[in-house]
Image 1: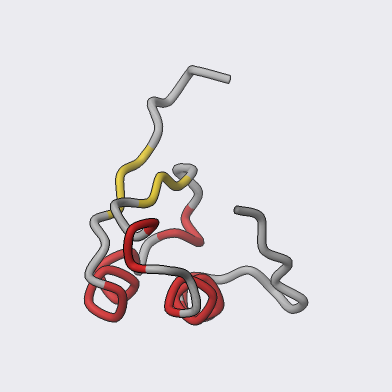
Image 2: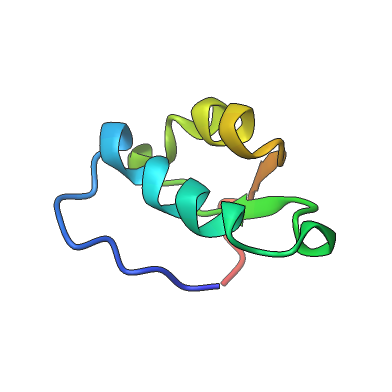
Length: 63
């Protein structure tokens, strides 16, 4: 799932739009999320608390 975030991409703002989008999906699709390793993803715990989905980070060098 891709999601446009129309403003600056800092950690305080990035966790909420994806969480809102995830809440609208059927339960069977809410298993886990995989995020990039950027500093804007630092608040993954807030995303997990809101959605109940664990967040995994991709390896540092895979494409």
